[in-house]
Length: 106
Image (cartoon, rainbow, N blue to C red; front, top):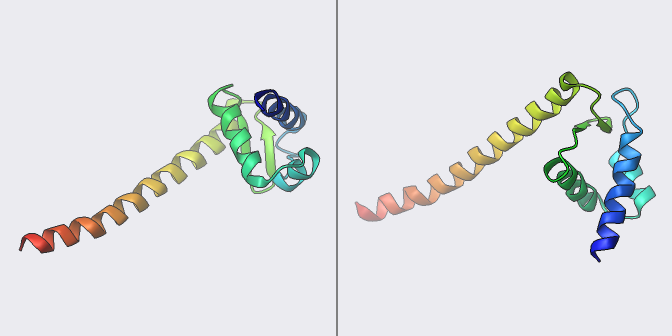
C-alpha cells in the first residue's frame, strides 16, 4: 500500500509541478487523472507541503507550484487565516461548555 501511495503522490505532484499561477490545475482534474477523491488529493497536497516542503499553492482556480516567495506568500497567508478561524471556532465551542460548568457552580 505504501508504494501505491508514494507512486500516487509522485504522479499528482508531477502534474502540479507542470503548472504555474497562470495555468493552475483544478482538484477535479487531478481527481480524474489520478482516479482518487478530492479528500485524497488534499491529503497528498498536505503531505507534499509538510513532509517534502513543496510550495504548492492553492487558489480558487486550482493548484500550482510557486515560482517565487511572493506567490507562496498568498497561500501561506490563506492557510494561516484558515488555521486562525478553526482555532476560534474550537474556542467558541469550548466556551459553550465552560459556560455550562460555570452555571453549575452558582
